[in-house]
Image (cartoon, rainbow, N blue to C red):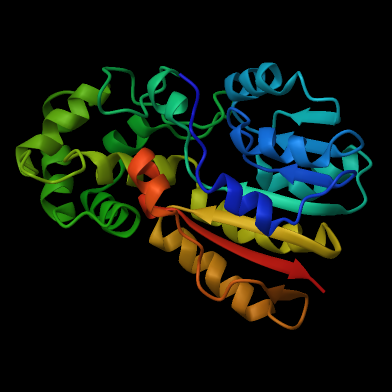
Length: 292
């Protein structure tokens, strides 16, 4: 299954793509956005595609192989954007894209415990080579209070206190190892009703964000991204979570008329047609700035 990217045409339009541009896709995934980017910047453009997930990177290489423009694929976390560009002798980029959503294959085909629909070991590391903490470490070692704060802050989970207590009770008798173990705990508190999302969605989201330190990565990379743009170059960022969007929004506002010009004061969202065809896009927000 190939991931369906969101707001593709909006990204293309916002980046003002043309032949010969140097564009960085910081979250390459399966290459959905980059495919449209390459169509616009070929034949003399350069695409730098970054992804911490080697499986995603290999899939993107195959998907984008037919395009003539120069392609540089980097298996690394985009938090190291500045060093990545320096290492590849890229002085400045004409456009940078960051999509903070996770691709469907990463949830369903990686075997790392991202999905509550599959019984897998609780890992959730974006980069499997990373020796950092896993989801299993978090649910078995965090204090009840820390779990509660984590689920409330990152997952906006209304039953965070009760779920944290249930996790701690469960792990006293048996280590929590698999996604099914965690789902079983959550389902004791969050009953499956008429809600559009699975009862464990917010819990899995919160733990995934903690494992990968996602919000801190965003805070760190934003200044580097602006610095890496040529004058007139554009930075386009797609968020899916209110905390992500808040970080991006406030950073852009703090730098407005200093180093950047805000292109869209209100975030761009999906069209009615896209929302119907790709439910994932319902929470996607695109913000764009231009280097001055």
